[in-house]
Image (cartoon, rainbow, N blue to C red):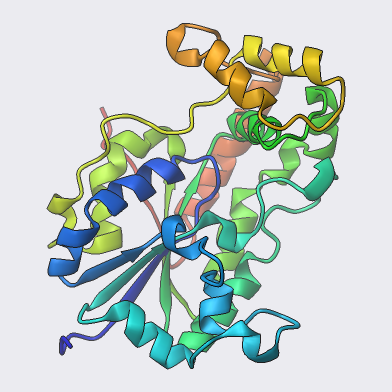
Length: 298
């Protein structure tokens, strides 16, 4: 095993911020990263039966020994192998994107800080956290489409009442994560700048020495729904659970073929959300122990 001290980077999401693209890019480079002492684990590993982070490290509430098969130190060594850096990526760790059964969302990712603290306590060392944020109206639009793709159908007006723009409070999430015992550095970036910031994001996750072996995938994953696709789902589902209906509509009316992307907000609502987003980013940029990645000015 390497004599270098172990460091841990955890990309926690958020959902709908190009998480799948980042994860697939890291996954494609997994073998060569391992040669450089960096071990990557993402959803392909953590979503296997019994492989959730809570189960692996033994802090599932209400489960004997937290469900762990071995002590957390042994599990950490098993994942580390001969490496000096572990990189985790699993947005579901901090909580669901949508409430079950389409219920009202009162606070997003309310368990994020408690779960991160439990992880750091279990493994006995600090974890550096990486997090992307997104324009509130676009985030709500994407979360709504994801709910449809999951088979739960309701009109956008109902969804917006249950998921108001005020619930997209990135300052609240970043502040709670930063204040969590066991969290080291916190790195944040805007989804809107993801492509331009990809090299910086990767360098932060895997280290500057290994960053060059992780090129971005050539195209994005999990495109959203078009206006026509959402209309087709609502017309056919009539309020019922409709498994696979939205997936079929996405294939029939793809954004890639020129169909207008779905947008459930008017121009004035976008303006309100964008103003709130700008204030949030300014606050995040000024937080101690938080690094907000930004593109170079023109």
